[in-house]
Structures are given as structure tokens and as C-alpha cells.
Image (cartoon, rainbow, N blue to C red; front, side):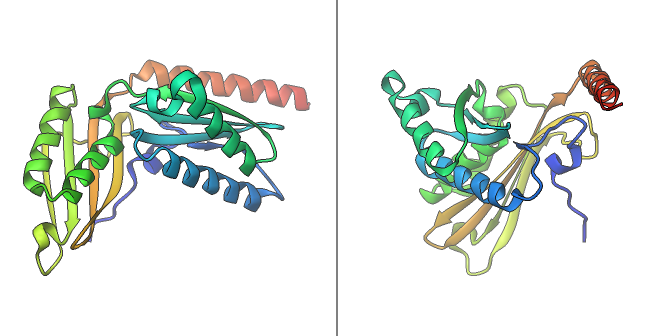
Length: 230
């Protein structure tokens, strides 16, 4: 048995950061439930907006929700009507002031979550899984990826017994911390049952200068905080 590690959890604190940025003591459980409710709302309301991820950052009296999407026009709506309605619905879940930010994903072919969602939609429409895998890999490689790996598992093609199939092109250095690995996992709901889709996309190495600069900034902030405390 291989020991599998999530590509994002493995890189937390080095080349990746958290999708929920806040700290709480006594009210941790309530805020965690609130976070889950916000994410469920985004998943339900923005099902057709190609949303890759949602980041939640909390201050003393405010909540900042950042939505990463490949179709910002659908999220914003005509004259900003959709985004304002969405902000009000998020505000109903939280007692704090809500700020909603929309960030566009300019290359959806290099985002593993969006690639996995696209494959899942094709599987739900009964498109041959081998064709869907090959086309997704080719599109990602043409967009500039240095490596792509896609794995699907379940009753593929309506077979009686579930199995796992995968395909890859290029290299996927999962053990290299500085490697920029995009990872996504989506479930496809078909007439034969649920099929899991996992995608890894290697987009190159993150420059050392960026990580060093961030470490220096963090050290300076810690030193300043300790100076104020003293």
C-alpha cells in the first residue's frame, strides 16, 4: 500500500496557504459551521459558474469571501445584481459585515478542479472515458502544463465491477515542495453510480525568490509583534 498525501496539505506553509484564514478560541465550532454553510451556498448558487475554490478570511467584525471562477460574468450578473444578491445571502449566514471578491481564472485548462469538473460532466453525458481523458490531457498540455495525470475510478462504461483507470503525460513531481501542483477531485453522478475523478497538473516550479521574500516578511512581522509584546 502506498502512503498518499494531499498535494496541498503537503505544501502548506511553504508554497501554499490555507483556504480559511482565521483564528478563534471559544467560538471555533460556530465559525466552522458558518464556513461550511457559506461553501455549500457557493456550491449551490454558482454550480454553473466554473468555480474552482472559495477562500474565507475573517477579521474582528468582517468576513471576506473570495471566489475563484473562470466565468466571472455569471457570478457578477447584469449590473452586479447577482453578486449583490449573493452577498446578502452570505450576510444572512454571518453576523459580521460581508465583503465578496471575485477573482478570474484566466487559464481554466491549468486548474485541476475545473478540468476534473469538465471530465465529470462528460462522463455524466455518457461520453467514453478514454476520449474524455485524452482530450483533457491534450488541452492542458497545449495550455502550458509541464505534466498532467488523471485518474478515474468506479463502474466505468457500466461494467459490473468498479475499477481504476489513469493516464498521464509529462512529469508530476509530487515530492518536490517548490513544485506548483494543482489538484482537484470531483464526483461524476452517472446512471451506473458515482465515478471519482482526480486530476494533478504540474505548472512548473515556484521561484525560490518568492518563498525567500515571504519568509523574510514573516520573520520581520514576528519580530515586530514580539517587540510590541515586550
